[in-house]
Length: 271
Image 1 (spheres, rainbow, N blue to C red):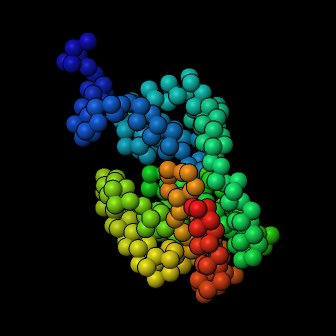
Image 2: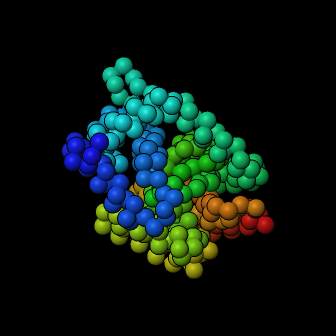
C-alpha cells in the first residue's frame, strides 16, 4: 500500500512512529513495542477494567492504535475482556511480575529487619523501585497496630511528594535525574515543577537528616521518612520507607527514634 492510500488513522500512526524515531537516537528502539508496554503500564491498582478510549487518553495515543494493541495483547494473554468489552490485565502479566519478584533476593534479606522496625515503630515499612514517575512497592511489612497503613506489594506512590520518591531522587545519578525530569516535562509543566521541588526537598533533607521526609505532603494525615540504597550485588536503586498516620506517628518520633534504625538497615542491605 502506498502512503497516499493510508487511511487517516494509519497515517497519523505512521507520522507518530516517524516522530518517535526522530526523537530517539537509538536505532534499535522499537516504537510499537514501547507503546504496547505503555498500554499495559497504564493500568492502576484500583482499575477493574478500562475501555479503549480510557487507555488511549492515559497513553496519549489514537484510539485506533490502542484498539490494535489491546486486540494483540488479548490474543497473547496479557489482557482479558469482560462481558462489556472492557479490558483488564490478563494472567500472562502475573507471570512477568512473579518472575521479577522472585529474583529480588534482597526482599528475603530485608524482611526480618523491616518487620522488627515495623513492630518497634507501629508503622508500615516498605521497599520500592521506580517505575516511570512513580515508586512501586515490592515488599511491605506492617506492625500489628490497628492504624498501620494498608498498602500492598504493587501499590504506587508519586515520586515528587512521597518520602520514597524523594529519597530515590536524592540518591539517583545525575543522568537518571535528567531523564526523569525530561519525561515529566513531556507530560505537563505541573508534574515537571513538582518533581523539581521534590528533588530539591530530597537533597535538602539528605543533607540535614541523612534521609528524605514527607510530613503531610503525600497525604495530609500521613508522615513518613525514607532512604535510598543500592542492594548488595544489585544494579537498580531502591528506596525503603517507614510511615504511618500522623495521629500516631509524629515527625519527632520518626526523626529521633526511627531514622537511625532505618539508615542502619539500609547500610546493612548495601554492605
